[in-house]
Image 1 (cartoon, chains in turn blue, cyan):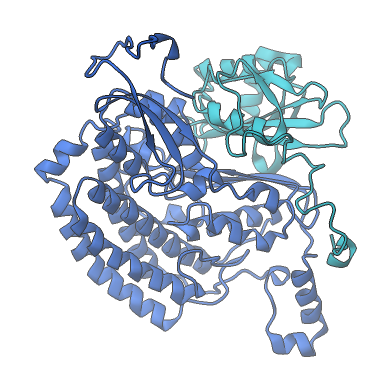
Image 2 (image 1 turned 120 degrees about the vertical axis):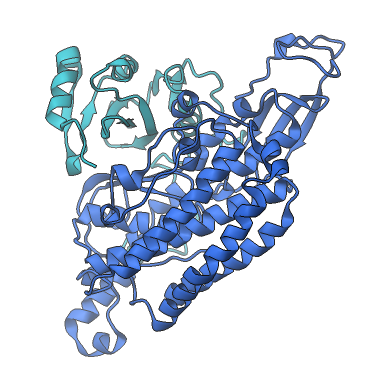
Amino acid sequence: MSTWEEEKIHDDGTYESSLDTIDGSIATLNLGPTHPATHGIFQNILKVDGEKILGSEQTIGYIHRAFEKLAERRPYNQITTITDRLNYCSSPINNMGWHMTVEKLIGAEIPKRAQYMRVIIMELARISDHLVCNSVIGVDTGALTGFTYLFQQREKIYDLFEEVCGARLTTNMGRIGGFERDFSPAFNEKLKAFLKDFPKVFNEFDTLLSRNRIFMDRTRGAGPISAERALEYSFSGPNLRAAGVDYDVRVMEPYSSYEDFDFNVPVGTTGDTYDRFQVRQEEIRQSLRIIEQALAKMPEGSYKADLPEFYLPPKEEVYNNMEALIYHFKIVMGETPIPAGEVYHCVEGGNGELGFYLISDGGRSPYRLQFRRPCFIYYQAYPEMITGSSISDAVLTLSSMNVIAGELDA
Amino acid sequence: MASKLTNEAVIERIKGQFGSDILSVETPYDFLTIEVPSNKHHEIIEWLKKDEILNISFLTNLGGVHYPDQTGREFALVYHLQSMPNNFRLRLKTYVSKENPEVDSIVDLYAGANWMERETFDFFGITFKGHPNLVRILNEDSMDYFPMRKEYHLEDATREDKDDRFFGR
């Protein structure tokens, strides 16, 4: 919805506004669909008076891929690949969220070890998600250096994902019931190296920006939102916490054994770009704490639940064992029996509460699957947050909200 | 963190206020689900938001479901609501017919409902009375059908080279 009030424009191009005028006449500026500042494909049509934004109209849907429709045609194990492509900066969280939704539906018990492994992977994904967002805030304020260093670290996280599942960006990681294999010795080594090296680089990045006079002047007060408005707009995740609401799904409705770990939920006060930046910075530190605790307390046991109907059996068994052959056939043909039911499961994604509303009628595919996509929900507050501010603040607001086009458009 | 409210206490309080307007109560997977008439859902959501004890004042999600076989109640609208202070979730459903798929918009209660309702309109063709700008959001403006309805199959219906029977569908 446009925040611009058309009736106040006169025929000669002048306008009336409650805001102070600069030029006294209006220009239209397209921010997007492809623009370096949008970091994705979506459009903002800005009405500007000089440098000041009077209103904005958003167009989205450029990369809509009909995920909810696709999901109604796919067996449950094939839907994981769809979830990769929602928030592709933290695909593993989406994957695990989906697996847990199905596990809730079928009532599966997951071994503690698999749960802790999931926590490690999800927190790594959260770090990589926040790294992208925060380093890009740096880029948009003109500090490219931090970005180049942090992206090396993000590569390391992707190396870790590659070690677990073979893929880096769209991971399709894990299975319904746990993982496809245990963490390899190479993974454990790389993770140890990462936990040793990363804090140094990260702290250096932090000293570069956090108390930097120029950065603070640029980001404080840019694109603020109050806690009340953020709740009205159904915000969740770091953006809501930056506004001062201490809501985190990991604490309120712990899943995958998050209740076993000790971590803090950082909150901001003003909901501006600086607070969003700081909340993400602190969340990265807390994620590291969680990973270290999970590694230290890693229980013995299996990396997967005993769910043969969701795990392809080893090939030699398929050829020699009737039962394995049947499971193999059922999985490949998508004939795994699923109970009818209705579940809502949510996880704390990189951008907020990522929800899966699943209705099963007992068929091979979901009857209806709806994704609660945090980006889609909070991006609609953008015009309200930038009206009255300058174009350069609008760019910062956009990058600090971390709008991911894949999640926005489904 | 455990919820401060129980399903029983919540449903008792809602029924105390609305009584016969609560058409059914279910708790699938321990998630309290109530069904309400489509002309009352706005009033009930408003009351839930303002009630100081329940304080269900956060809209998590809303969306449609198409049940082509249920004559007279083909479309379900599902609202997921949440009380952050009480850590409680509620699912509210209302049904409309395909002849008259129209309900009141709740944008006046929750600003965040704006795009969610536009998305539901875009994909199911359910219209929301009082919505400030009810146009398509993800699909192209010139599209003349509502793709999430069950009569629109994912694959091209004119294709003859694929027979679903051979794919276990």
